[in-house]
Picture 1 (tube, one colour):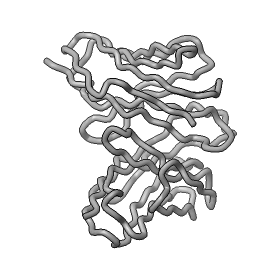
Picture 2 (cartoon, one colour):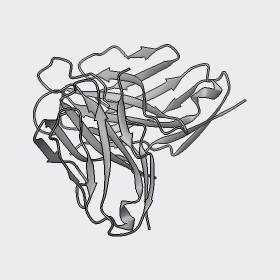
Picture 3 (cartoon, helix red, strand yellow):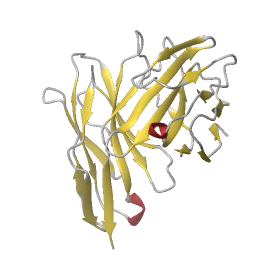
Picture 4 (tube, helix red, strand yellow):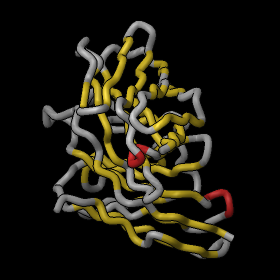
Length: 117
Length: 118
């Protein structure tokens, strides 16, 4: 089954304690992305990756890091989490550019609810 | 930068009736894609319908259809014969056409909570 898997689904932690949210897809997609969802703001892109070892900032990258060492994995790293990073996080993937399928939808993971105390 | 606006924070509809959710967007580009996503309480993001900007014909998917007005930069979603399972948050989203920087980035509206009354 084609899917994007995020872990954990829920996490409550404290300010300053480093955490990683993992994301893995089994569709051989080049493009992967992280979003955060906040009330009244919709979803906003944090970081994205066009392919292995190619990452770039989205609209709200402050306080986050990512890596793309393998095609299937795209972890989101919070080195020193703060309460303003309490949010619902989504990982998404899709085929990359140049594939002639620019209108293909992105596949989303089931979300990770992070609470930073 | 592109922006997407959903001006209706909440909407309600009676079961079996029709409801329209509004979405406007701002872009200087001529080629792009528009999407409606549904987010039920389970938090999943489910694609409802998509529209290519170069197509004049409005997209339809069963009970879901859009009214795409390119000149007005409007992209509304009509749900016919509403069902209890349609209750969810609905997001309108914009994406540039393939190629160039920010490829694949979805720009979302604020969302509209739809309540369906039996």
